[in-house]
Length: 486
Image (cartoon, rainbow, N blue to C red; front, side, top):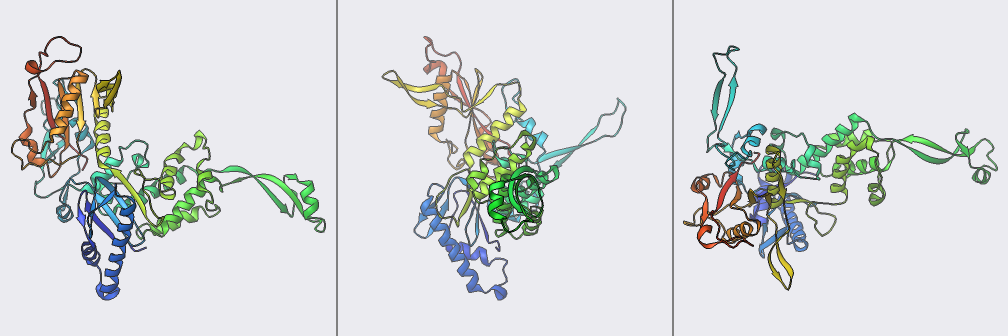
């Protein structure tokens, strides 16, 4: 299938004219014909409309003739094309035109998430400054020199595709976590092709470690005696053919359930790619003696021994492609394939992953429950579940939002979010609350306006539950902007 990929960001609206314009861009109209290209674009838009009618929680209608993305990122593929939805961290056109890519070192990002003695986070972090160390001498008198490199704010590429791939690599219970695909590779490929490449890389890894074989009982009418002679069946089959033997024997074969699923996945993807077609055909040849799966449900129930646990990640990919088990379930015809993720969940999981990795000695809990806002007739109601909780120290709540910095007083901070923070402070008896937003192209200037925390005078108006006196400390809500893996 020739790839017709249309890229948008979260909450972006588009119509059939936008698709036609995108499909015509870079195409040879004389070779393919303008009318033919326009027809494909209209068909693609109709297929996306059909998908939307069954999945308005994932993709919506702005009006009768316009579709609009929601807070889900990933891909929706139909017969006629692929819709690519990327994070809203930057202007889509500016990232496409940019040449200078950020490549933030993992250690630099990890250090930014270290909670210091004053319970501070993300101190002195900058996307625009990096350095390398020149070792000039081994003597004690001379120190190594740090040579600083500065990125231009106007030229830096906050690539949303690289961001999405790096966020997915930290997602729990997903096949992305072991992917070794580089930022350079992913920045130049359509998102769906990246997922196919990840699957093929995982297959190559499994193949190098060794494909699984198993003993399977085969019954066959053979020209020689092998295994156990099945006497009753032998009489029926060979009353005339005295030279044959109907026997049963165990054979050590590749044609087992996991390999059948892998081959079926390779075959499924073969018609959906141009970039990876050669790799898929080559991989299929490696499984030449394996049949295609005829019963996915039965084959996925196959128990794999611990000696072949390296198959686990590859089979997760097979489940996504063959059973349409997206991370966000969707409905509709089999012609559409979707792989979508909630950006709020991705952002929350990434921040939690980095905080735990940078602060192994701290007991950081995710979605900690047990507290309720009110009780009615001795029944507790309205459970409070902060995103991240460090016992008796702080609460951190992630918000995948781009605040509207044009608002003078509130700076785009939603009032209900602050109410939520103070409810947490009351029930968890915490004075230190951190409201975490993404640090990206669209929030760089806003970060400077929140150097000081928002303070609620708890010592004058507020007391904690079960305490008879007013609090002696004020509650501080600090608005922070967290570094992301661009």
